[in-house]
Image (cartoon, rainbow, N blue to C red; front, side):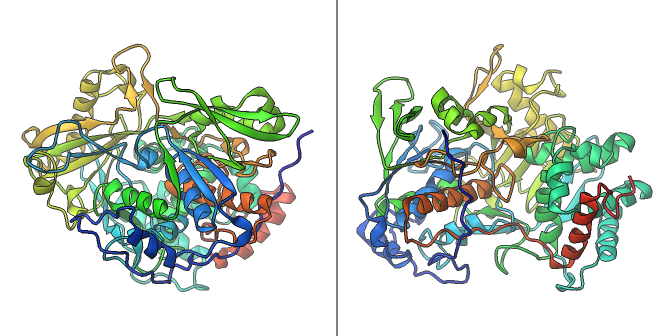
Length: 622
């Protein structure tokens, strides 16, 4: 009979997790891009920045980490620092998962690197705390702050409108005079939200007032109401989007869900949208609360292609810690022995289905996306832990990028562009403006491209403007033309032409999307979405099987959103569960949770009582 999963321990701060700690700079690298090699010098530096492994966690304790994306690398990092012998098994021949960079084939010339392509642009909100802590502990040449020092603040977001409508430039810097702790009141919050929306949009006054009130309801709702009532309520219904203007629906419904997290406002959980996107990403960040240090603003991006600035140095550092990597490893089955009650091995082939082998370890951390993890769980394993079966209810959707390489610098805005009216929920960023230390035409491609406009298509089921077909029904070339047309329609207005057809040189789309233009298009790298009821079906990092642990952005985390932060947090929870199961004396990983303003806690306690009595929130006017 399966055992009930133990509650995860309250973590303590492990050595080296203090964000204020200044780490020694790594051994200099002759490469102009500062990518660390896995050398003895790097190993020596790494040894200074990690805790000495306790005797109980000697290298004889082997851990197989299944997946080399952000969650897998985060787990490997924490385990290696504690002396475990870690092998990472990765499907591709590179690390990083959806976060990695990809070389554009046949694009390099005259000694330059290939043009950089990605699954989609990466951004690192200021409220991320767990992931930046890991980044601090990855040495990087010339940076006492590790690869975290490669983050740059974006200062503005452009909400671009179509058909010549004026765009909204939204500053992303913290508020100049935010309230001090203790001075934040519900009246102050309502006034600030109302003023911002009234200034920034053309919403009718009564709609602005209503939305501000709905946010106040969520801000003062207790945890129980959020998890039982708002988790079951779509964001669309919570803000009554269907009862108000098209502007209201576009700006406050669709623009905050489909364009940001590839989920529809009509389905998205109010708990997730309200708590993470509205509160953590926007409101508390604007007020300077709960951010990753005094230098962090709301939105941050890397100062180079992701693999150069982060993933390659990470691999080098993990190698210096003794982590081994097995590439081209397609995990097909987690083998479970019902009599022993343990995982006994993992069946792996190469990506083409050949060269089958079984790998074994003392513990297994499965750090694979949910759509790839589910097929590896057989009936016996699912019976051993019913939460695995509930993962079948988790849903994914497509959110895939297209890189446009252009002949001249096209910054668009010093941050991201949200094309609010685009049928395909297009978002974009001009990347070269943030890549200090890079000369785009001198460093990449054949010298003709001066910038990369990185776009993401989040809506694949709505007809476009050129061909009248949804993205799933288009060919790759048609998707490119549609995305370009929708981007131009959004940013070219008021007599300006920020981008033109003459600017466009070439493009790249993630090869994980295949079969476009056929009746059965496929995407190997979709994104977890958050319709109502998702929280119940997300598993914990600890399973009922004592030597199997789960990590990935689908695992239950406090951040509760499919993000790199969630992937990192889940890895920390998986490692903490493994340490407890193993009886290790190593200090557990520290876990940062989302900011909770102390001023609102008394109101949440009042709401907790009202919720138990079956009463609505104090501010809920319906």
